[in-house]
Image 1 (cartoon, rainbow, N blue to C red):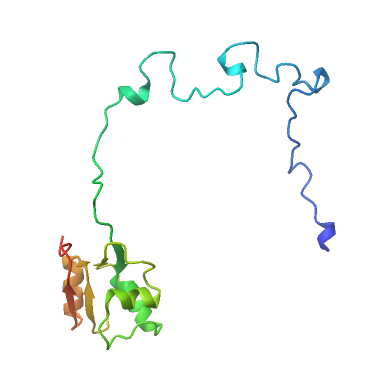
Image 2: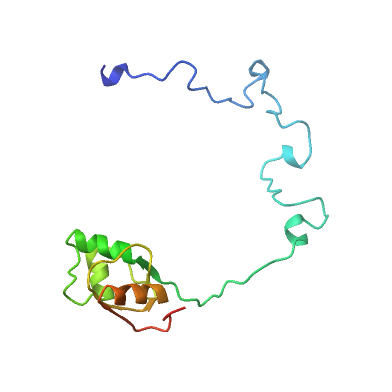
Length: 157
């Protein structure tokens, strides 16, 4: 088979309906829009309009709150750190800082800091310095014989 012999299966593609192209097309004159009215005209943006009745999106109560100045952390799991150590992208003997994690490619960018979570197994003895960590992550690192120092305000939450 050659490139010029490639074809779609019969019936796989359907021609686009050309609207408003004469009475013989079956979609001529009004082009399937009916006669008169708001929807037959161009430039109509009805959206949530309900004819003057209070629309549904305004009748329902608003819930929750998104803090505008909240801190957003890059998340790293202990299992990911272990995988990068096994692959030789991180050196377990040296101190692992946030800049080292970014340089290794484990984290794309620091955002407001890096937070370590306890998902996965950690076998290596590490010395970690990050902005935040969960209590379980701190315990897991210490259990493996390492140390995890938290520099930011997002300590064990």
